[in-house]
Length: 228
Image (cartoon, rainbow, N blue to C red; front, side):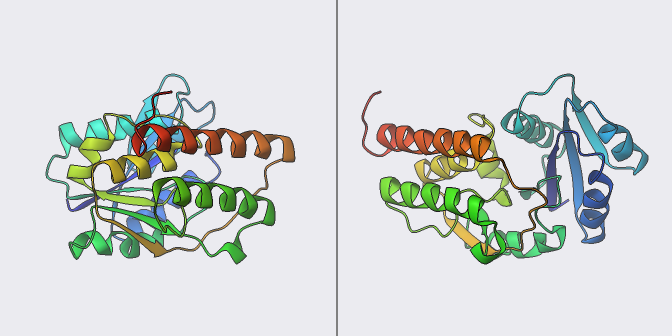
């Protein structure tokens, strides 16, 4: 098959059926990585006839993606493109064709969506403003969005990513940094976004600071060759 859609999921019994069905209806093959859910996420996916791999305990989005990458490399080796799609309906499965088009046109090796900031809650938008400008400043880029979880890549890029993928909220920045390190052609395309909840101020602040520190440390090591 040309494209596989990896869907990392954790306690998403409310949304997983719709995400899987809409992915299928858009003409794509979904694989769900259930990252140690305590609810019926895996059961629902199995009943829907989709492929699901289950972690016995929660390991984080990065580990879930690594599990999916390894499965593709071992059992779906003829796949050309891999899409990462969140399980919470934050992004539309119907936008998958738009995200993979630069890969099909051989214009990119790694593609991310970029959000319309008017559709993003102010608190989240502020955090993304900090991340985006810090990333662009330290890595010398002009990216419109550095933390969008809607990502597509070639199989070649995936094989590079599966060796280093880790983390939760830092995962998008980590993958972008790795794409730059490997001189991948990076493209960004507009995608719709839907926020179903807003993080608390204390929780959001911890996430913003943690991701911000990661961006700076990674850039200092990778771009400026400073040992920390």
